[in-house]
Length: 403
Image (cartoon, rainbow, N blue to C red; front, side):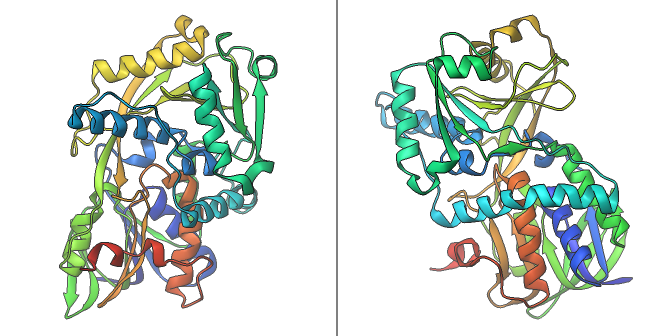
């Protein structure tokens, strides 16, 4: 049996961020336990730090709400309505923007202290408008966030062509969220993990948590395929699989479930994008190695991680509509990830009423990369008994357990 102050179950971006911030700011003995399962969400992310874009339903969100509208309309036997922006609540804006602001300093910190580079790039996020309906949609977005007007630029067709010369000439303009940038998601997870290791965190890899050890209302540790790990606090960062661990720890269930997203990746290309792109069909990001990442579908298919020709075709056609030059490129590979969804699209963070020695850090849906930094900080504040930087009430699992 091994004894630790903290055991973190799950080594995706959220678990790795918690390991890093806890090891940076405390002297606690920490173990990070992880087993890679098909569909790990961190490995299927675009790496977008789209704090405003995702909060107002762009990026992955625009495809998500387009899918919801279609499903609801089909179920009601009605025509598909005109798409309208879906803005997440103010608490999420604060959560996302606070995390976004942390990345420049975090990038420099990890470079200087740990020699790791997660490829932070200042790109902005442009929503491309093809027609008047898109312009109305964009106007509805911007009118809903007047307090962020200084972070938004309107580009007409001529300005867009100058800044993004490979965008289709059919585009009539764009709105640009100038503070929404990107990282390399693979490198971010690796940077958190390696930095945590350098700080003394024990990495217990290729190891699955099989059960949670409880004494009365207190969690005491976990049983794993590599033995028993006793701890003072268990942190559930198990992504789309978090509900199973939650049930073992508390006896309850929480609504965290897999939401499948299919991704298309092109072969390496010369630089054709100066920023990240969102349309009503897909999002597009050119990574630091020249590859073009195109995503992402929104499908509730359980833990299925297969690719389907129809969805890959839809994404590819949407990308070629926006960037005709992609017709000259080949697809390098496709894959699918499982995002940890929740009914209200907000993460589940913090303590569980009536349960000691356990914290949630899960349910980040499509924004885990973006919000990993603030999550790591907030979990560290909880563990050390400090007042949290943000109010965690809207993110408590209690919202799903009451009544």
